[in-house]
Image (cartoon, rainbow, N blue to C red; front, side):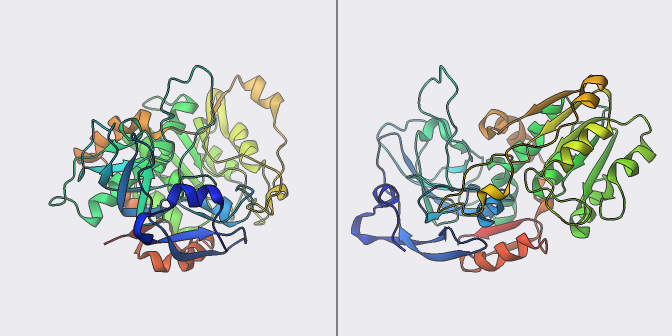
Length: 386
């Protein structure tokens, strides 16, 4: 299938150079690896990054399921990656060829935003392409890229698997605690033990939580949660709220949603409001709730043919929320804002977020590992580019 005109324009390469990339063509539960054009500098503020480590993210599954996407597939997928700069535009001054950088999932807009504007990044429709590929063009590189203290001599696959998580999920797991108003000593329930939920639980541990409860139904995920000191709660076994209240009769001080719009109930059926119902029920008087699980609905389109299977509205227990005096914070996280703190934790050896990892694969294996990730047979998958 031919690429859209916008993608062809953005990725059109000189000398017909191509690279391997993972594409989504609007067919649910199907991605392919094909040759796509190598990106080139289009603007003087651009940089080209040779990707060395990428990853499959849980939010990629919304696209994979056909419930999130644009009207004009195909596109190259992926929004988590790091690598080294192979080329810079003439107006890039703080970065040099050879520097190792993380590409955040939300890029800089290149101007002062006087009014809120939609965030933009790689891995969806548009002219940037995705990061499950060998190269990426990054606009406004000086303000978009996150430098990391690695060189060609000091880097290795293991340390890159720590740093690449700055692109999205470590920052997201950390920030959802802020959304909930977290303070050292708090008790917290984390709903969802996928990679983001595990890193929310890990962040709570790093930040001094007195107890962390990790709620999921996948044994491998709950084992990882237990490995960092969290108390695993399997909602397939019994009501997770009652399980937690058995430990915390008054409820936890904070509770966070790291699942989002494709949440399932104890029968394994889609129930978009199940997590928010549980969050309000399990949080104590005066506590706080945070949400980073994606909940962005849309109409059906060629790139999201099943979008309308997800309702834009849910049942919210407002009476309980109000009477408990709870507060709620939610939204998309900008990794650049918290990157200095998290990078220092990794560089100093105080944080090793790569404990979530289970598999390192080549790009040719990506379609199979999307399937395995979707079926909960793996937890976090990295893509290595030699």
